[in-house]
Length: 122
Image (cartoon, rainbow, N blue to C red; front, side):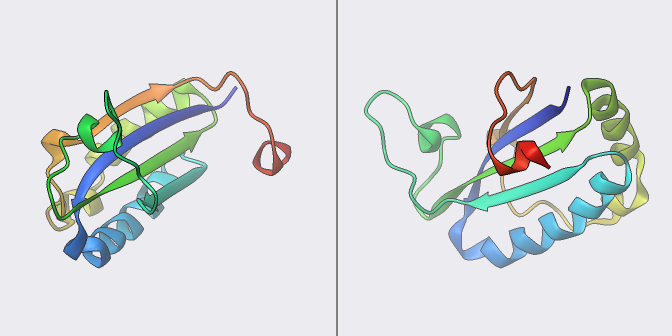
């Protein structure tokens, strides 16, 4: 069964291209070490809620956009092995500083329980 790491990140809107470049540099490292897919999505229609929402979850400030990202792996074991290798990969250490406040990023590992549609058929 597959495994997914999910992320919600507040990114200054004026650093969108810098974030895109940073993510594009990191993606091949994850793929090389065992991830099967890396997806970064720039917030486009992220409504404000009354009790909770994506913006509140990461304490997004005015001028920040919420990024929703996920990385797919063949299994939890593959994810754990990949993350260890990624953290030791010199390309990650040499990468410029993250263009967002990592303290407000939320993340977690998830075991899919329903997977339907075109991606599931592939």
